[in-house]
Amino acid sequence: MKNLIALVVSVFAVVFVSSMAYSADMSIDMLNKLGKEKMVYSVDVAEIDVGDTITWLPASKGHNVHFIAGPDGWELPKKSKNNKEVAITFDTPGVYLYQCTPHASMGMIALVIVGDDKSNLDAIAKAKVRGKSKKKLKKLLGAL
Image 1: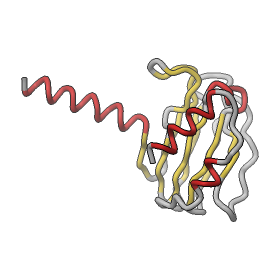
Image 2: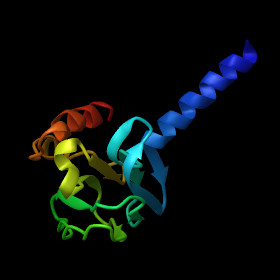
Image 3: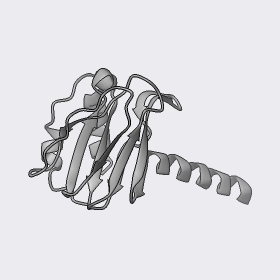
Image 4: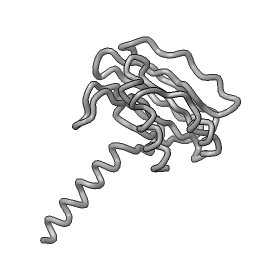
């Protein structure tokens, strides 16, 4: 029985860590499939410190990174080209929302939280997203 409980706790920890990541510099895969989900980034909510860099890797073809909302004072980078690695260093605290342009309506969105600053959550909640991304954004924000 103790082994079963330990196994359940371990599985829960792995699932939780795969959806939220805390790190210094980190990598996020752009994927066609992860478990039962389709068209996803490998991390839904990345929490990093000011000055950290995230590198998005085209693990599956047909994806990009397109920031659609962020904190005031931060110029959103241009959307990346499909199938290309992109690295961004975050120097401004706040919450950032990004999507895969070709798969945005399928819910392929994610968040970056820099410096544990969530002061712009209202602006992120008002960002224009479409299709399944509307429901996913509510879910992501509700978990914060």
